[in-house]
Amino acid sequence: MNHYFKSTPLKAQIASILMACALSSTPTVFAKGVTDADIQNDTTTPGDVVSYGMGLRAQRHSPLDKINKDTVKHLVPAWAFSYGDEKQRGQEAQPLVYNGKIFVTASYSRMFAVDAKTGQELWQYDHRLPDGILPCCDVVNRGAALYDNLVIFGTLDAQLVALDQDTGKVVWKEKADDYKAGYSYTAAPIIVNGKVITGVAGGEFGIVGRVDARDAKTGKLVWTRPVIEGHMGYMVDKDGNKKDNGMTGDAIGKTWPGDMWKYGGGATWLGGTYDADTNLLFFGTGNPAPWNSHTRPGDNLYTASTLAINPDTGKIVWHYQTSPNDSWDFDGVNEFIPFDFEKDGKTIKAGAKADRNGFFYVLDRTNGKLLSASKFLPDLNWAEGIDLKTGRPIEKAGMRPGNPSDAKDGKKGTSAFTIPSFLGGKNWMPMAYSPDTGYFYVPSNDWGMDIWNEPVTYKKGAAYLGAGFTIKPIHDDHIGVLRAIDPTNGKIVWEQKNVAPLWGGVLSTAGGLVFTGTPEGYLKAFDAKTGEELWKFQTGSGVVGVPVTWEQDGEQFVAVPSGWGGAVPLWGGDVAKKINHLNQGGSLWVFKLHAN
Ligand code: CA
Ligand code: CA
Image 1: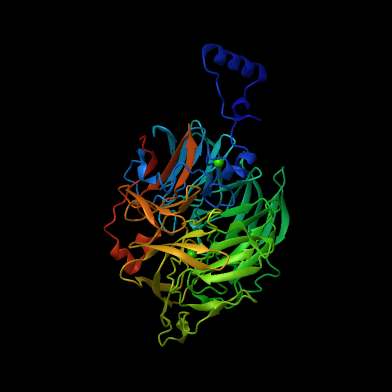
Image 2 (image 1 turned 90 degrees about the vertical axis):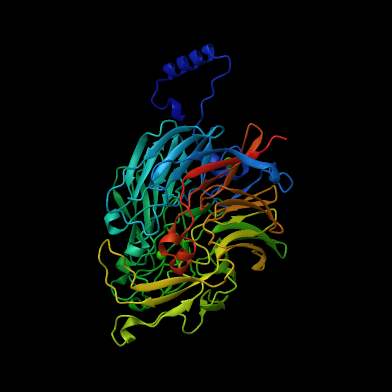
C-alpha cells in the first residue's frame, strides 16, 4: 500500500487529495514509495539511484551519456553541502537519489537528506553512539538502502535504523549485535524482495560473521546465516519462534582445530550483491580469527570466501574460498559482481571479484566453479598463481610469517614481506563494470608489508590478531592504480597511477567515462576505453566516497562525498607517514554541465 495512505482512512485520503487539487493549479503528486520493482530495475531507470551499487548486481554503470568524452570538460559544481560538525574523518558513502532528494550517510553514523537540485538540507539524523564502540577502521559509513518510505542504514554500535524519508524520524530500530563484543556496522544494506540483507563487521575481535535477512518494513528478523562452519542458522516465523535452519558446513569444526571455530571471524563487513537471474545473494567473508594462522591449521571454512546464499531461506548454495588458512588478513569480502559474457557462441553467467589478496577471479555464478584467476597486482608475491583445477592458490615458500613458538623467546615469529599488504590489492572501495567496453575498473593499490606473528588468546571485546605489521610503499611514484581489466582474459588493458592509495569507489557511464576520486582531493573522469584523464576537480578534502549519476529535469548530475579518512591513515604504517598532510573534511559535491 502507498506509504502516504498507510494510517489515513480512505475517505480522509480522498478528501485531502480533492482539497489539494482544488487549492493548487498543478496536480499534487505523491511519491509512491520505493518498491521491489524500482530496486530490481534501478540500473535502467536513470531518474533515480535507489540501491547501493546502482542496481543489485552492483555494476555501477549508468546508461546516461549527456556527460560524455566530449562534454565532460564543461562539468562544473552545481552545489556543495557541508556535513558540518567537528566530527569529520572518512566519508566513504555512496549517495542515493529518489524523488528529488539525496540521502547520504556520513562518518559517526550520521545521515543527511538534501534537496537534489539546490543542495538545501531537508533533515539530519545523528545516531547517538555509546562510549566504547569498537570500529576497527575509522568511524565510516558506506551508505543506506531505500524501501517504501524508509531509508535504512547500519550504525557503529551495530544497530539497524530505518528513518522516514520525509522527516528523518526513526520508524524502527533493531540491534544487530553486541558492540561490546566488537560488532559494528558500516556497509550499505541491500533490499531483496522486501527483505533488508546485511552482514556484520568486527573480524579483528573474534566475532562470528553472518548474513541476516529482515522484513524491511518492520526490521524483524526473517533468517540468519552464520558463515563459520559449525554454527547453526535459524529462521523466525511470524509469531517470533526460532526454527532451526541447519548447520553451516558439513560438520562442527571440520576445518578448524579444537574450539577455534567458536570465535572464527569471517566478518561479512562489506555487505553483498544479488543476481535475479540465479536468485542468489553473494557475500564475501573476512579473515579467520585470529590473524596468527599457526593457531588454526586447516582451511578455516568459510572465511576469506565468496558465498552464494538463497535469499528466501538463508541456505548456502555454493562457496569459493580465495585464501585458505589465510595468514595475511586477506579478507575475501570484496564485492562479487554478476555479469555475462560470450564464449564459443555461448552466454556465460559469470561473476567477478577483485580480491584483497591481489587476484582477479571470474567464477561461474550458477555453481561457484572457477573460470579464471589473474593477478591484478603485477608485483603480487605471496603466490605463483591459482590452480585452475583445485581453485587453490599456489603459495610461494617463505611468504607466511613464522610460528612464534619456533622463536627462542616464543614471542615473535619470523617476519615475511608480502605484496599486497593486508589493506589489500583492493580494499572495500567498489569497482565498476561497463557492459559497453566489457571491462572492470578496479581501484587498486601497489604496496607491501612486513608481517609477523605473536601468541594470542581470545578475550571478549579485545583485538584478536596475534600479529604485528608495517605497511610499506613498493614504488617511489605511486601506490594507487586505477586498472581496467578485461575479464575474458585477465589482462590489464590500461592503468592510471596515483601517488596516494586509492580508497574511493568507481562509476562507469554510457558516456564512455569512468569516474573515481583520490585522497589528494580530486574527482576525476577517465576515458573508459583508453584511460586518458579527461577531467578533474579539486573538492578540498580527500575523495574516498563513491560517485553516482542520475538525471533530473533533463540534466545529468554527478555526486560524490568528499572527506579524507578510512583505514589508511590509521593502519597505513610507512604509507600513513607519507600522506599525513592530507586534510580531513565532510561534504557532498554535485556536478552538472555548464550551460553554454
Ligand atoms: Ca534507477
Ligand atoms: Ca580483516
